[in-house]
Image 1 (cartoon, helix red, strand yellow):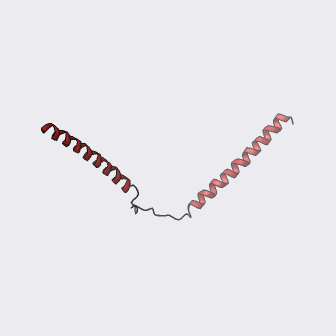
Image 2 (cartoon, rainbow, N blue to C red):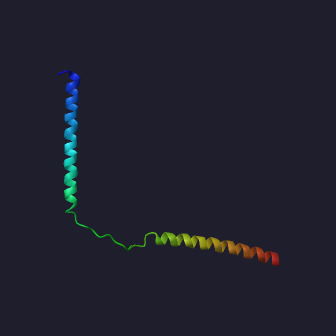
Image 3 (tube, helix red, strand yellow):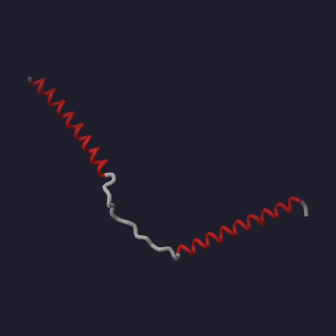
Length: 81
């Protein structure tokens, strides 16, 4: 046997072993899935996460709008005075 043929043979054997081990793990995982317990996920959120942040943004926009309205009112009062 020459060196190239021997290297090819050993490479094929190595790859075959890797495939067989991989197939074994995949088969074991497939079998274990059937015994896995189903967990029901929550459908309602029990926290206020995000609500406060949204409220702060709305309050900031309202304050900004109130400030603009006050500036317009002051300008109109100066014009009418």
